[in-house]
Amino acid sequence: MKSTILIIDDERAICISLSLVLEKEYIVHTATDASRGLSLMKEISFDLILLDLKIGDQNGIDVLEQIKDYDKSIAVILMTAYGSIRSSVQAMKKGAFSYLSKPLDVEELQIFIKQALEFRYLNERVKYLSEELQHRYSYAGMIGKSPAMQQVYQMIEKVKDVNASVTIFGESGTGKELVARAIHYQSKRKNGNFVDVNCAAIPEGLLEEEFFGHKRGSFTGAVQDKKGKFELADGGTLFLDEVGDMPLTLQGKLLRVLEQKEVTPIGGSVAKKIDVRVISATNRDLKAMVKEGSFRQDLFYRLNIVEIKLPALREHKEDIPLLIHHFLAKFDEKQGEKRKGLTSEAERAIISYDYPGNVRELSHVIEYAVILSGGEVIEIGDLPLPIQETSAGEYGIKRMEKGQSLEELLAGYPMAEVERIVIQAALKRNGGRQKVTALELGISERGLRYKIKEFHLGD
Image (cartoon, rainbow, N blue to C red; front, side):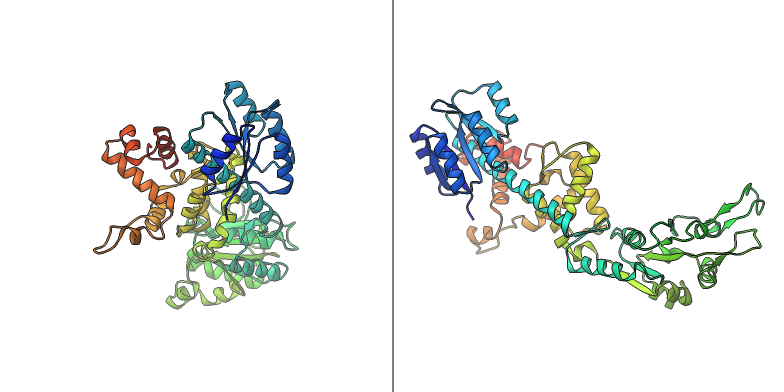
């Protein structure tokens, strides 16, 4: 669908000439006075307005304010033969996207129009995703609209107030701890402690003490009583992360605590009754471990009364745009900055990647891009190299096969990618000389410089 542009300029010849240039790509309307232009805005929904700074006796800055009062989302590019730094700054403060001096460079204008429309699209997308996140697709800190994630939310709702043990299965980085916390904080136990133990991170010799605590004097260095994780979680939830890495010697003791619902600290003689709900998580196949003898079968059935399986991110890629927006907001706040979003090319590249590290890896990708991006919009060059390479592999142009025509070779590839490759090849052939390259490609040097910046060819 073509974007709709309004040209407001008191010189009819300029309106006509710009219309002829732009009407192949856009739906163009013109007005030679401000009042007519503002009236057209009430009849037609415009995506962008080209506005002269001096329209008869009217100041274009005043007209710009009226446009923004009517619809803040419309992109406005100011044009003037009376260019000055002061009016340029004033226009940008009032909400203009950019400011161009007459006589206009047509190629430069077209570049700015595309950038302004992309900027408007990003603003609208950020607003849409914010509403989606707020009203429909977030649950207890988790993000997702896919059927796979909706099923996870439904499982949490079903089990949150049941005292049965739950085991969460999923690859590393899928959000197993988030699910465990969601179950706890949505449940009747939410006022109790949520105590987590990473069974893979604690040395085997210290695990028993971590779980059960100790009494003063029970061993050298035990100068005072210490509560174990079970006692700390009394009335709440104990989360056993990476439970598949728990040694066999401790598995038997854990089973006894779960069956008897009481715990005895190391060096103690009196057992204490406990009321603890246990949630476990692992990225390992516990059933296979049971068969090979590295995980107790009786403990497996005690822990795995309810099973929740988390999908890998590559299995619910429709959630990636929502996750991107969530992480952008998070890291923008952390960096003390505000960005509008990503270019469509950068977003496609992020979605095309398979994420062996799942949501955790996507989070790191967005944080990396936020830190590296120098502008309001994150571009593909701001992304980590593995994602750029994946995108290049998806859209890159392969070598022409024998008998294949140029049209057949290029069919189906994005125009921006073809343009980037042609400019890059021309620059390389001409030793980076921009004047020669511009002449060869039939564009102005200024237009070439914009393209080099747009495609990050000068980095």
